[in-house]
Image 1 (tube, rainbow, N blue to C red):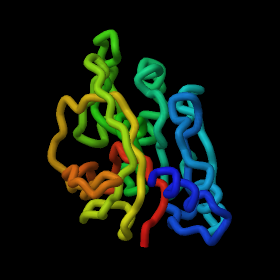
Image 2: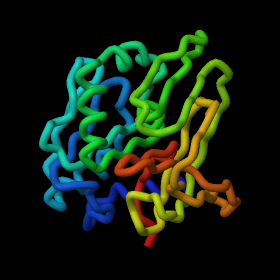
Image 3: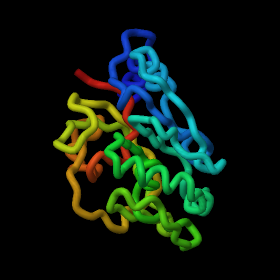
Length: 212
């Protein structure tokens, strides 16, 4: 089922998932490496202008971006470097304050949160734009293809297919609008996931495509 989802999404047809903005800044380095190429290409084909930046290289998203995408990756292995990038932190705070659309998935979601505790038990302060705290001190595998029904906080309004793969434990999750009602590939109800605060949204789900 999962491979069929990805094959359909990667096929060279009409782009289906709308871009988050016209001028999208995309984080891209070893901490933010899990973006699906078919999504980026689909956004380009729909006219979105993509720029890339590396938080690990001390870079920040473009000041004129109207949307910022933080994909998944390994922020837990680079949390100290992310925490130490003052330009990235300041730019993200400024963008959130002025209402720029910001979406983080999996590792990107954790970076939007308040802090990440690594496998050695050291806590690293993150952006603090979403009220979520995660930890890798006690690793637990979350794995599988997911079907998402958007809720009021979601950045998309159509049903989606997605993939979940991470070892993080959610230590604390505060108030905020939820993004998705989740079912696994067999239809089992997995509850609700994700958070929205203002223009900032995120979840552990790696979105693959629309399902409608």
